[in-house]
Image (cartoon, rainbow, N blue to C red):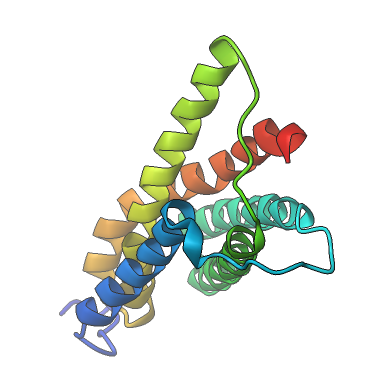
Length: 184
């Protein structure tokens, strides 16, 4: 080992746990979309359409934190990079809570009302966003674990994929909200 290398604090990759969490998160989301009997059937005492707005705010912060983390690591400021990554995970977790809450509480999913070319653009963004959002869950978790445990070779290799995908997912989440907002 070179003297400027940091020894891994663990060689575990937590694959079982990460894959389990990823599957559970994605299955819950799919069930809320495609199994209407799972959602809440009672009255809600507040306007739940505020939750998608929170989703967009949390996605915006995730995007900003990820950019800041990327800039920090380019400048070789690992400590600041870690802090911004943890901030991005925090806002992503808050997003997940409000997203799942909205889709659990909402009596029905809103329909996009745009027409013409904008409709095609919306669905392209939505479909790519949705597919990559499912993929980013295990990517981000593996990247976090490998970075946190100083398995830096693995971390760098996967982070080259994770960062651009996560940036895309967080930014297109905001775009989807802005395009969908008139129809909530």
